[in-house]
Image 1 (cartoon, rainbow over the protein chains, first blue to last red):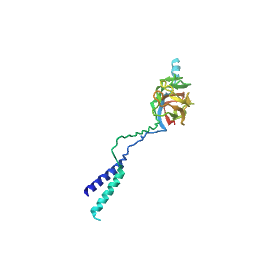
Image 2 (image 1 turned 60 degrees about the horizontal axis):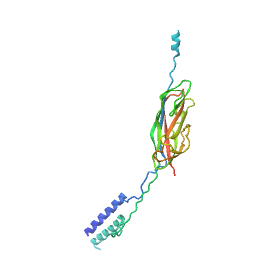
Image 3 (image 1 turned 90 degrees about the vertical axis):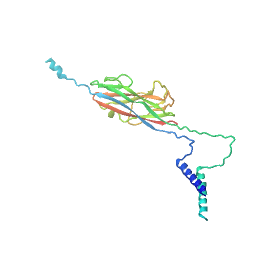
Image 4 (image 1 turned 90 degrees about the horizontal axis):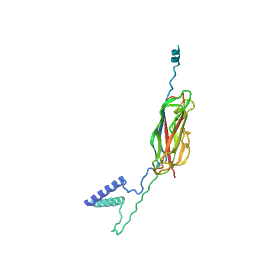
Length: 63
Length: 192
């Protein structure tokens, strides 16, 4: 009788374990099918203000 | 019924139920056997910027004039450095795709100043002619906006024919100034 109980316990634990692991062998691979991949690039520049002419310098030099 | 008998019956029931879940079948000595292997390869649409930064340089607009800064050719009325870097878009999936382009800023919010323009052009990478099998917008310099516009209706998947280059051309008035950045977003959709 003890042997019967032991077998029952072992099989029950095995069945529960296999179920928990979902251990079926997959026949179809899972691919990452993406139908809308959004990615980003960057465009940049630096605009420096034009230097201001100092007209006073020229006038002072001529005086 | 004695307790021992009850436990035995319960054990047998547990064994039967466990075997049902584990899976049992009648077996015998197989002289020959065959097996089937099934593989389903799913399509994966994926694009990536191989290089993702285009720096159009640092410079000054000639006073009183409007500058044109271009990633492809020489600049006009622009006293500054040339563009470095580039935007190269690669189809690294296993299916042809169409893709759209949009910017997070339009010309006004990107460049500022009087009547700016922010245009881009999409062309095959010089070493990968035929990458974009069916062109759409941006075959010539065209204004990019904050709305999606189809840039290529059929970008190939095969290595050697799966990359395009995105060039940019800006028109800048002399009253615009500052450090400017715009984000370009490419969105791909797998073709059937």
